[in-house]
Image (spheres, rainbow, N blue to C red):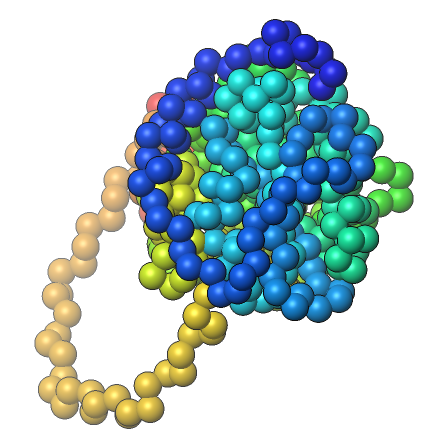
Length: 424
């Protein structure tokens, strides 16, 4: 464990994150930046106040931005920098379209050799110290310098940046009205580098209440809670999808909400949005699960939302839907078009043929199946709610919804499955 004031030689070198860094760097130079709608540019801010975490600050302020505009703070992933995240993530376009100021915190290689935010070091995620304090200083500087709305400040990050965003939301709920955790890690998952690798993959098993306790342990006395959006790809092999489930369960529990979403909506890019504590416009927590997507920030270049590249994946405009969830913007291209004005053609006049007279045979009663919880849900033996799997019919808790947890269930009557503790 280290303090931000330690010399570079004392900083740990995370081996697994080095591999991620190599992958990130191989494709980053191949992507061309999208055109900007104004003459504004990403600019460094040499002095912004107390900087115990030794971070760099960059800002993007659209031309003629009105006073009282919202602010979004952005945290890049490992081996990235502020310029790369600004170029590809879609937040530059969102800032122009919705009238937002952007601040990017950039990690120093003296802090972390692979450019990752140190979300697993207690000295860097605690309120008033390390990297967390540096980001807080950036927020206060930008709000004062540009006359921004201090009640509409948000933070979002990818991977290590997403994990750090989660920590900031718990440490500074008075500073951030909301946040977005993209392919990140639950609050309080790791307290060391070794711990961090376990959190990344396969992830840690905790109950929703235990996860919620991690948030409550960090909250300042009397503080409210921020609105939180969680984004994760179901095929992420760098940061296991179980982390998206756990982050959602964590914040749903912290808000003391029911584990069943108030609404579930299908979005473009094979994305499912679950809203807890209200509908899409007023929910406290939202979980955006992108089917088949790997590790990265979801973007939608055809819609004018970011540019594709290494760890910027052409699926859905996560920036737009996140801004919409926060209430400060929306997806590029606006709302869906009106339904077609033409009347549908008349239904066919012929009656359908009679159904087969033979009844389908029932599955054998008493069948016992041992499989991963992910497979149980996929095959209709269980359902997925807030990161956990529940047996269909009995509603028995099977545990975390992922491929790492294996359980046995028995179909006692057709369509009614029960947990079989002793196995098949």
